[in-house]
Length: 113
Image 1 (tube, rainbow, N blue to C red):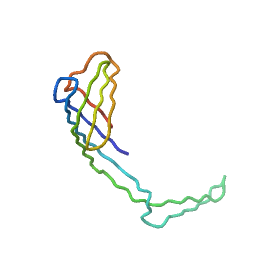
Image 2 (cartoon, helix red, strand yellow):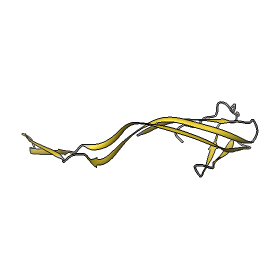
Image 3 (cartoon, rainbow, N blue to C red):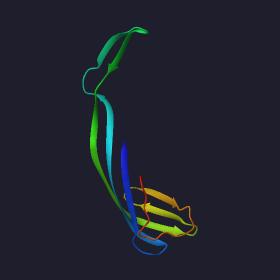
Image 4 (spheres, rainbow, N blue to C red):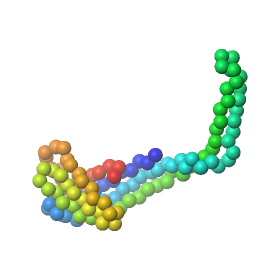
């Protein structure tokens, strides 16, 4: 499970602008790699007879902090669509704002990218 919050800032107030983004998050990962032999327990239940269950401890990575940062170029075209290019990550992001009012450039943010 990962929880990540990102914030993006367009540096210039024009359609083609450089931007910076940063993020902070937390993740927990269960590797499903056994750390010890399985434990099996059996008991008697009057309605079902013997019931047995097994349990196996697995390795997990608890509380790993995640940081992210990037610089790139953004192009905001008519109709509130925005294209962002992140050269270091090799990806292109497309953002579409549903409302018709433009947001101030300091208020633009993306969560969970």
